Image 1 (cartoon, helix red, strand yellow):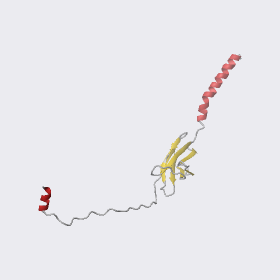
Image 2 (cartoon, rainbow, N blue to C red):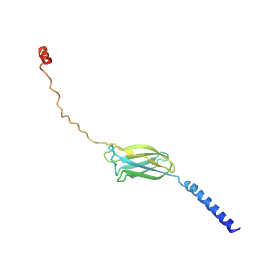
Image 3 (cartoon, rainbow, N blue to C red):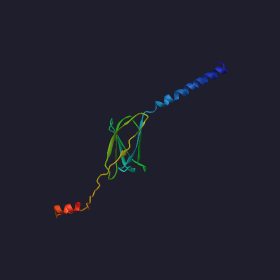
Image 4 (cartoon, helix red, strand yellow):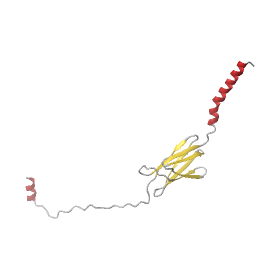
Length: 145
């Protein structure tokens, strides 16, 4: 084989290997991720919130807490149906269903509501005074003139 044919064969083989590499690498992705932010009713982030993820197919669960910016992250999840729930002190637990897809990052932000709070309503207005004296017809006519 001539040196020129060897170089062409080597270049052809290199091009084929480079073109097939993305297809081989794409086959390695078999999981997805879940990320979200936990906030309160005002939109403020809730750091330290407890977040639990439960698989609908296997009934397994895993937990994490939100970071200082209220973000949580579950990585390398098998594709399928899940329920994510978040809770924090003095706030109601909220859960929602999510679907994890292969190679995708699913966003499931959660807004918590306040519970256990005590609301006090104070009434300070007084009722209007009743008019006990009745005006006569003549008095009304003078007011109209």
